[in-house]
Length: 206
Image (tube, rainbow, N blue to C red; front, top):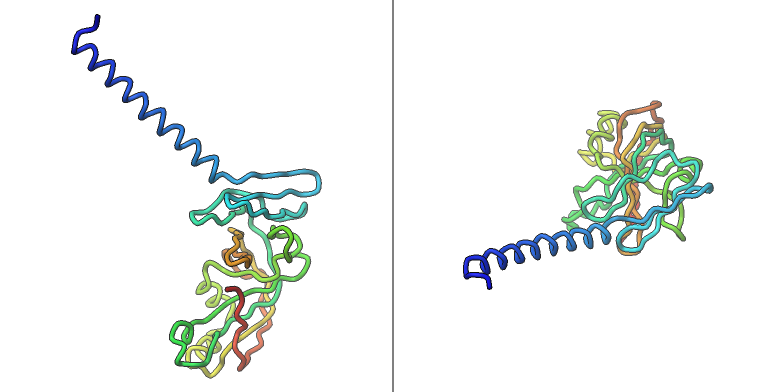
């Protein structure tokens, strides 16, 4: 028979094993839940996030699946040139709408060839509207100083123009049944053709 000291040592070892084994199972289950499933074949591929949302990766895509972000967004790796038309301006000219009155909004409509090569939410439209994670850096590099000042003073409500850019860190997510596609602006590939306007920017999403 085991004495009291031996029984306590055995019980303590069993408890320690149970804690370690239980944490290992929890970690494994969590990893399985959060790790997206990727499918690749000769015709491109797709990735399914932890919520079951599937994103199509076209065969000629300039980006590759990398990982998932902190909030479940699907992240892609790859630096590429994106050409198209940008729109930068106010969402409203009504001062009573405090939440968005002073907000300058930026979105980019990529040319169709590049839009068709970017990953998108399966069963829905291609990535026809791109957002930027570093809006200020984009505006300072692409929009002339005089027009930024005119926007600040509300002598202009919006500016738009053609641009060709180097970007990376493409990411995608779906919220309120609306897909969002986002990139990080790196530098100008080709100078833009600017058009200043007195109309507001269009608002998208929920």
